[in-house]
Image (cartoon, rainbow, N blue to C red; front, side, top):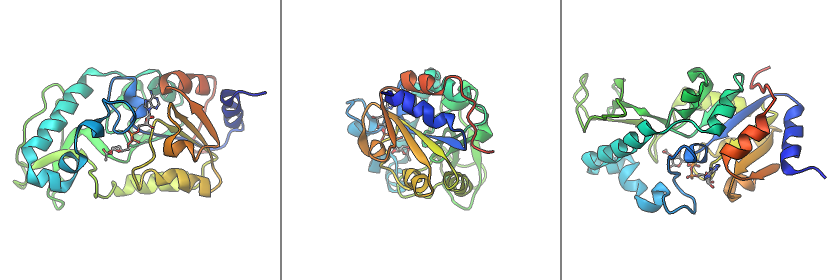
Length: 250
Ligand code: OAD
């Protein structure tokens, strides 16, 4: 009898278009906290997302929001890609759709244009004025306090997507278009509870894709899996991808 890992590898051996869709669990073994899992360190067990990850929260207390993101940025400055990031980077023709705002896939060697960051980037600030396009890189070791946009005077904020905000339009459209034509979606370390991003799994399935999920907890993503691989990404992903040259495009 085949193990689940062998069955997943047999699915990948069929070839066709494959893409990865990741969440916070991908970066957990690098030392970045997830948002919502049984781990008491999970960010939304310790902090209120409506205060820290919404436009209303920012407008009510911008200093507090920037302080919290800067605390996260200092943590991000310390961490390095783990074995799962490296195994994904060893598949240079694979598109990485990610909800993660870190740059660990890029640090592992994935070309930036092959990473679709659905929830933005914690490595940048942007102007809070929707009519102003000002954006700048942050020194993650020494992130600056709340400050005004040099172009229009509105406040700068992290270039991440907050609850209630739209996803970056063209990135989202490219992710949706890709998920409509996949043969296999590899889902890694996401609770699949935040929409519209989580809807990509349903979209891919509805268009005929098979779904492999890697996660220690079955959760919402596991219930949509053709093959569920229970375990840590850093262990499972290298074993799953070893020897393949997967591609998201023909
Ligand atoms: P969650 O924190 O909701 O889910 C993390 C998932 O990773 C859970 O299913 C865990 O079981 C799993 N996990 C934990 N350790 C793992 C490991 N070592 N290997 C593999 N999986 C592991 O994170 P996301 O689904 O990414 O939004 O959350 C979605 C969005 O909610 C985030 O992008 C963020 C948050 O609010 C924004 O910042 C806009």
